[in-house]
Amino acid sequence: MEKRWSKRKPITLDVVLFHNDLGLLRCKTRDISLEGMFLDTGKVSLPVEDPVDLDFILHSNGDTRLHHIRAKVVRVTPQGAGVMFREFTPSVSHFLQDANYAS
Image 1 (cartoon, helix red, strand yellow):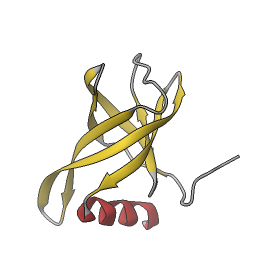
Image 2: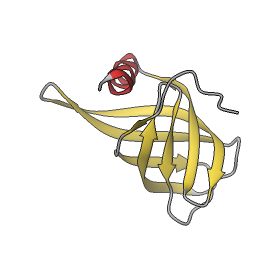
Image 3: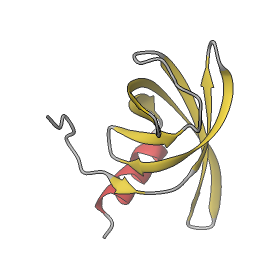
């Protein structure tokens, strides 16, 4: 059963993920929603329920900013991991809303 409140939007972003035991991992988003994102983690499998930190760059209106999101791994597949956001900045919130509702 689907537990999302908002639709997923296919978006590709470069993300640097930090996990306490695994260290830094470069990955790409496959899709994103207001609540989380799916990450292509390659051959690395992340433990479900573990906290992760995500860093990525967003370009908006000629401005480039590094953003940080705290998240939790909620699903793991052979293709990657689904993470649920735990906390993030207002600018990331605006990006997620714009990305989610843009046609």
